[in-house]
Image (cartoon, rainbow, N blue to C red; front, side, top):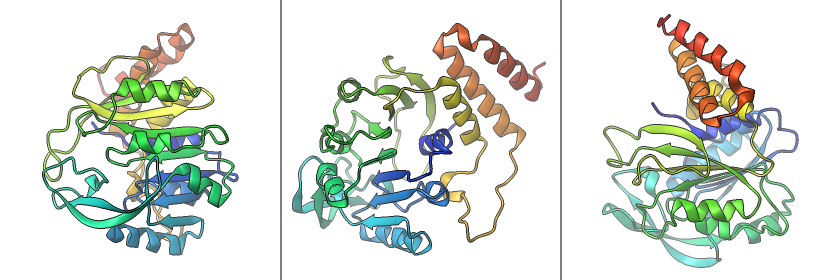
Length: 301
């Protein structure tokens, strides 16, 4: 099974669109931006790779609320910094050469979220998504915590990447700033690029040990705490929804595909796993209801 954490957060944050702001560090081709843009969010997308930036600019022509920035982001500003890309996987472009296939392809300018938010006059960030391939912790260190705390943060942990801090260090950094954390744990990466793909394992409240010491994944940080039932419902809707890159643009006029029974089962079972992990008496009734419904849909009873 796989899961799209950004899609989960989109479902969790639906209804927050009035004046909402997303900052996407490592926006790639913009596949995760579309649902937020469609709902009226203002989005700042950082992508230093010229090829990917071209796709983002094409998207911006349809969505004026999207601002594209050809900059890398870290904890200190700099100019002319080597940027590495790979022919094995377009998704591992990075300021860090952590894979044998990495080759320096260009030089980029680096900004910090402190400098950028001051320049833009941003007084709120509703979702900060970081996918900086090894630079996530540095991006967080460049955040102006004394004047701006994003409502929700998504960032990656992967100790296999050189220079990446352990999950515990990144989690402690965020908890010290008042965030409630969940982790999305994925099974260890076998290879980048073609073949296989990555396999998702679970969501869990932090602190919790990883089920596999070599696992990687994402930290989901909530400034104002996390609503367990709301999150479980968001997971179910995300599993039952199309992939982020398949969400139709407003101009396309395409309706979403209908929810399949298989997707409903997967979503309900995700709810059950989450509620069991919460170990709270408040979940007893919805947990039993979800277990029974999932079992009936799967034909087990």
